[in-house]
Amino acid sequence: FFYELAELLLVDRIHLHMDLLDKVKGTTDERIQYNPERLQGVIKRVVKASNYGKSKKDVYQGFAVYYCHNTHVAEVADIEMDNGIPIVKKVTVAVDCGVVVNPLGAQQQVVGGVIDGIGHAMYGELTFKNGKPQSDNYNSYQLIRIGQTPEVEVHFVDSNEAPTGLGEPTLPPVGAAVANAIYKATGKRLIKMPFM
Image 1 (cartoon, rainbow, N blue to C red):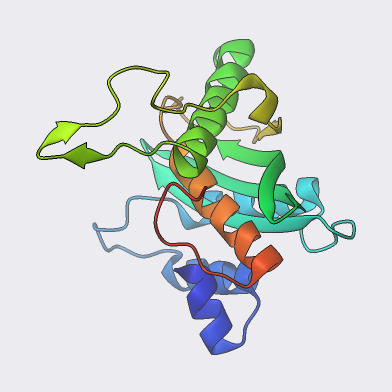
Image 2: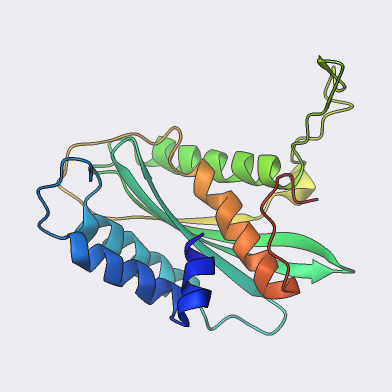
């Protein structure tokens, strides 16, 4: 949605996010639960770490930012096209979840969320006929396979804030990041999952 807005407004996608976040700094509006400075921090971190906007030829990047469970996340997905099929090659993630108590466990939660999110976004189709699911086992419902998993590069923001959630925050934005990368590659806006 933000990509579409930026395109209509003829502004850079990242600058749109940063400008809107600037406008809510210092707000007393109780509906705004995220921290604008922390969201800007993960955006800056992922843009730098992923070399966003300066990818190699035939590598298409999509960006997304997300907040839930008091955790701020930004992701960049790198895809390549193979005979018209999008292949997710790498996802760069910046996370501000406060103090990282267990670095190895936190890393695995982020990677797991990203891989699971790609699986749902790309392949997780569940169809029904007369109210009955057509897939009744994993042989008829495709999950992401080992050969389809990309490199996931994780960057945690150093923080003195209280530790927050990591079980879910990295999963939702990866679908948007992949969809935005596919749009850059194909010019087609995908709004229904699974993308394959």
